Image 1 (spheres, rainbow, N blue to C red):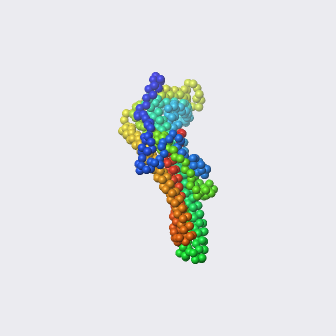
Image 2: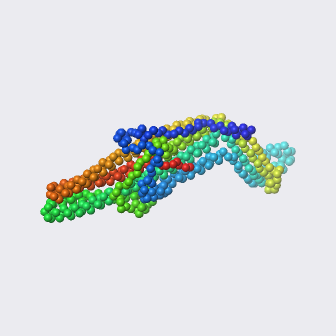
Image 3: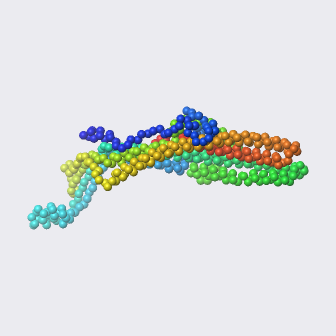
Length: 486
């Protein structure tokens, strides 16, 4: 009979979750919402590994990302939630195992002389003996008992197994949440790092421009003293120098804000990363961005933790629907009890004082005012909500990828044009300086050429920073390598 019951227990009612590959285009150009010219900057899909932060070969950035992954508050909270999910999974799995409990008690009792039980036991005695019997029954006595209780629910309809399935899915969702938190923190740290280095580069350019402007001001003053320049030329150069000096405080504030944002990501107080984030000697040089390999679209969809989390939550909602369906079916429990019971303090361990019972118990739901039906309706609605959330997450992921690729492609084009602008502005300044020194033009022409070059250099430096931010957005949108482990 037990074998038959266990065989019957292989049935699990409710819907079965059917995982499916998330929607993905055949190539990254197929799902594109921007102008066609941006597709020229989009690499073809490749089976090569998608680039990540280590390809930048920046030790400071690598150290920041490693420390942020361990110390960030959001990551640590996600890790605790993963530990909670593991504990809940163990708790759900324990429901399949038999339950064994021990109990013992020793109680001092006295029956009431006028209670129903006392009167019932003495009612059959002659009236002359009833008073004596009542007094004897009302004497205090000690009752002792101890025993083991065994219970095992036969999971006929898969209610317990569906609960375990839901707990497994929740564990997968928590693992994906941790991976998402780690990747998001890394992307945010990289973005703040690029902002910091961009501000430091702008400061380096500004310092060089201020030094050059100061030298030129001294030269113009000397020429004015010799009658080769006017006081207006001196005033114009002083104005340019004042403008350059005024650019420095905001850049210092940007550098400090980016540094503080990084220290907050690493759960550190302000100023804790000054040594690591110190200005480097080559900070006026743009970073060398590696080639961008996108991988296959189908692989990218599997990499994103948010998609994995949404799929796991859909799985959990489907399994919980099965739990609600199983609540409509009977529950069969095998139970047993063995113990010892005695009155008084002696002979407790005597074999004759044993008690035992064994047998199945059946719980059949008949009427609960519609509670189970309402619960099933809620679970089905939650399953539909999770399905919508899953498809929306996949769609949003591809929008993020397309937006990131569009921004990166557009910034690469802008950066190339700004490099041409800086090159031509430098040539124009050299020509204006030569013509001014030969008396062919006034100083205003050279000053305008100088301002144009300074603006071109600042624009390209800003574009280099924006290119880094766009590149990091692409890496974030493509997702981390590998899958989260439970």
